[in-house]
Amino acid sequence: MSDHDPLRFASDLGAKLAARSRHVCAFLGAGVGCSCGLPDIKQLQGKVLAALKPENREPFKKQLDKRNLEQALSRLRRIAALVSGEQVVDGLSSTQASSLDSAVCQEVVKALAIDAATDLTSMHYLAAWVGASQYHLPVELFTVNYDLLLETTLEHRRVPYFDGFVGALKARFHTELVEAPVGHGEESVPPFFARLWKLHGSVNWLWEGQSIVRLGHPVTSDVAAAIYPSDTKYDESRRIPFVVLQDRFRRALQEPETLLIISGYSFGDEHLNELIFDAAARRPRSEFIAFCHSNIPDVLSKRALNTPNLQVATATEAMLGGVRANWKAPATPQVGVWDNNKFLLSDFRKLAEYLARSSVFDLQSLLPVSANPTSASPKVP
Image (tube, rainbow, N blue to C red; front, side):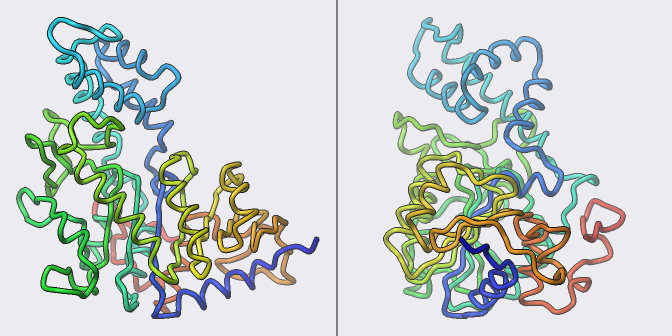
């Protein structure tokens, strides 16, 4: 079995990105936030647990038994919705479960705050690429992250985008605008607006009664942010933004000749996995490229073996056309693509730089005096 050529792969990717008729999407996971200095889901869980007050720490530890942070939040919301009166589950009444949910969400917001230590360089590269893109259909950014990295850099680079909400002080979610076909009818958002879809909520989303509003800043410490949807169906009205956005993800992947770039995602969400895998199987002319920072997840490798248009790239190996093999070291290193016997685009920081380079000649021109509005000097790779 012959090895894969990393330079050819990178060149082919550049050619795909250059095709203006392509429907280009990016799906970003927790690894993207990690590359900027924010915690991943495991680190976030540890930070939240350590920051909780003693009276909340032990009850939440119990919820984390054999569950991750998101599963624990989902269970708390299930208890709050289904338990009534003086009944308790796991030692929690409905009121106590709601209070614990709020306390956990408040600590999540604090742990994901963007400060002087956050390196926004790669996010500036990504935002610059989005802003310079001139595809027939808008670039669509999907993320399961709660942080405000994308919003911060898109706005700093003055890239117009639509996230499903309309308004300034308390933006309301507009289902009809999310579902409207691009460029068709008066209710369609202009195609030069990028789309930003936050599938698991955001630190600046706020529950207000039976609906969610988006604030212009992270929620304050005395209220709960609307992060991570519960997996129950006890109250469909509170699930509307999440189910609408997940359906938007499904429909986006079914667009003909879609190019989906996946980075920082560990393929730990079965529902989202199936949306990606189903689209790859149904749309053979579309291409789905997963860049993995470490090993290839088993669930991904099994599907990629039988789905030629589902490609996977790590620092040392790749799965292309259903063939799993190591990278073949080129005769000479190539800046931003191959160095020290590693394929660099598996790292989101290098992938973002590559995307920016595909549409902007001078990368240094992308970075203002401060790459991070809260930092004194940029961190340039």
